[in-house]
Amino acid sequence: MRGKIKQYEADVERNPDDARSRFILGQIYDEAGDGASAIIQTKMAEESYMREKDMQGVAKCRRDLRAYYKTCAFKPEDFILIKYPS
Image 1: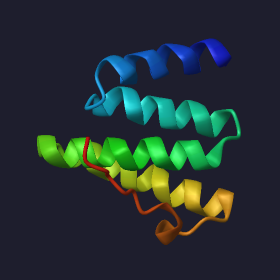
Image 2: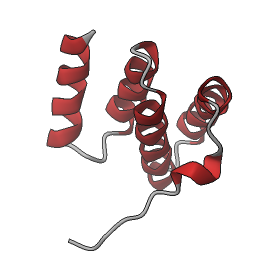
Image 3: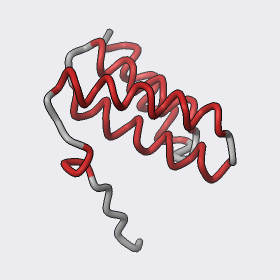
């Protein structure tokens, strides 16, 4: 599991806007029991899919997010992503 996490973290670091890699990383974090990281990566994937106008990707993210919030006892407002200027 740790190897898969490292692989997808490296993919995301190389290409931060790669929605697919972020989505998969979110799923891996969920499998590893790290719900907070799963939610963060999936929300970031959702944003990238929105920019790409990939509504199927957005729908998959939202489906997974609903499940993560439920199983991890988090609320969507617990994860407002704040972007700081570089």
